[in-house]
Image 1 (spheres, rainbow, N blue to C red):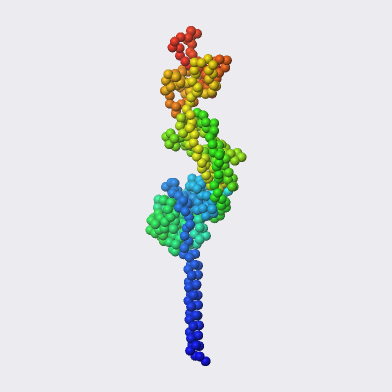
Image 2: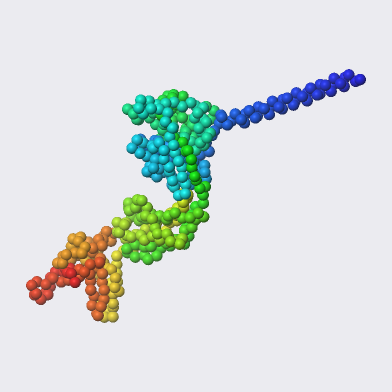
Length: 424
């Protein structure tokens, strides 16, 4: 027997066994690291756009709950832009702050939020929550949980809420509604108020979480085509467009303003147009925009679907000033019937004005010339002119008050006779 070879084989087999044990150890270590990561690392995948700044001094819980719902929408593949603090407030906010249970709906989507109370209102004391419990909750709720630290009802300004988003090891992370930024819990306002993460968790009155949800993961934006302007006049214009969506258009809004004085004439809330057979229509009236004329109007068309997705198209129009055909000394000339502002050809910086603001004006109200401001003309001073049998009738628009010459006890007309309006 070749002893040397046998020994060598034994050595080689032992070496192979050692390599196998070493590889097994590495495999076990890798498995341990992978399994361990589920309890030691739960990083957020939320974009910064999900986070918002609280609107009021005492609405930290409402803002945090809004971020939680936005987070749930994002993770479910739905649009979250329409979910705001003001939209959650009607169902989520009550006389005692954030409601203990509420359902927020938008389009075909629904999120149910519940509260777990750890402290005592009766004894006015906070409760506490273990770090491992918080980490377990975050594993179950990747959209986060709202954590409310409480210092007693006599010290509201030393109480605060944040949206806990994730953790790394034993370090908790949150989105603080004071600045809409992801940070460690220890560096948030809660951490500052209670001297770090550990003590903050010993002063938690309650937390809110998403108990159930039904969200349509539709992220496709509506489509707007064939947007156009029609029927432009000194009174306004009409906007029409075709709208479509893979799951249905909910509404179409038409925020409008002029280039004069910025957006001082922008309506709030934005006006909603009519929607029929995929065509949206809206009439822009200058009376809703400070009667501004001879200027550019800007209309944004926003189409929304049931999931909160939206798209926008801009159209513009120049609204003309109030004017009509000038009468000319031609016997064949006929002024078209219509509404007119009457100005003297000698000086077009003045116009024929009915004294006062009554509509209809009272019989006998005098008519004079007044300085013309095309951007601020009262509708009371618009005249409706109609032609019949060689004569024009001039009336205050929308009334029976006619342009009239004043008679003095039946005397003949003379130079200087006053002009007035009188009921026809």
